[in-house]
Image 1 (cartoon, rainbow, N blue to C red):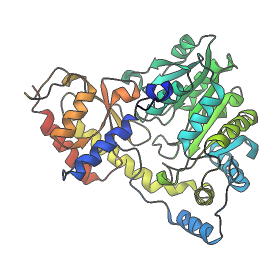
Image 2 (image 1 turned 135 degrees about the horizontal axis):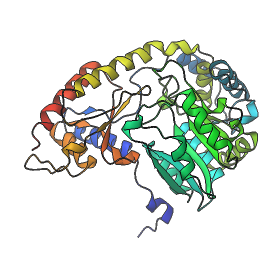
Image 3 (image 1 turned 180 degrees about the horizontal axis):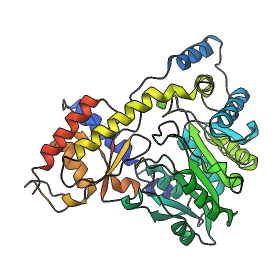
Image 4 (image 1 turned 120 degrees about the vertical axis):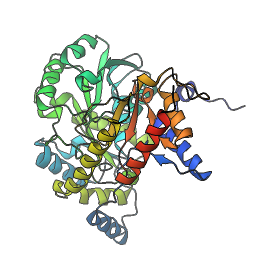
Length: 397
């Protein structure tokens, strides 16, 4: 018998990856599955970035890399943060990792002790919960409902803080809701954190470039809390580089050194070729994302119009990312005679089996009444998926 650790037994499989796995299994059986569960752009990496990667291979970038990333890449990240976000960082404050997920895990594992509290607004990205659990800290959830565009208020934040609070983690634009905090909303939250300098803020900004509100705002712009902010970003979403596995953090130099130490014992440095590609991405005019952004806006509006024709579904109009977080509670308690819909998990399994549409149950993100739909696919597939959904849901009584 294999004796696994309590740590790994306490973790569950990522629900987003689980749904993608089930979709692939159904496809392998010959079913025409439309996968609306996946969180990656359906675009290709820009050509100038691919050229840089090919050149790196020819230039023999095939050796171990510095744990925290090549110096010139870290310098380029600092230049990007200054150019796009008006934020001043130095290369010793930057740590390059194998994806933003590792950057977040590094930060939580370096900053939280067992028993410490980590405040997490709900809905949250699925891995926040698992990472906090892995650190043996305790997640304290603040529910943000659709009535407030899935965003928390300063009062809610203040009420959640205790003498055990060590971290706060959130994303803007948000996965799964697409909600975007405005400058004034971030300013109000920063005013609370400024009164609690012992609390560090992990700001997940991986969807920075997929923002329909006009301008990305970072909580790190407020000097009163900048040293408390651990800014996390990467190339996967804005540059369609999910498979390249490269993210980064910008933080107080002491935190950056701690995360470098941890990473040196886990993965060491990120792929040399990915880093050379990321250097080209950092130097790319941010305007390159305009065409992709407009396509995502078009798809968002399309799906919202189609959902308006499906009774019992409610959502917000997200200002970023490429998801809709849809409340489907009116379907709970209904049945097609074979399958009963008790919760969002049943709802998703019903649509997967009945209509061959894959979405992610909202419980993965901390809200059991909702499901997450990714519109990172073609208009044709979105129209087909919503038609299938409408037909399947009409059979529930």
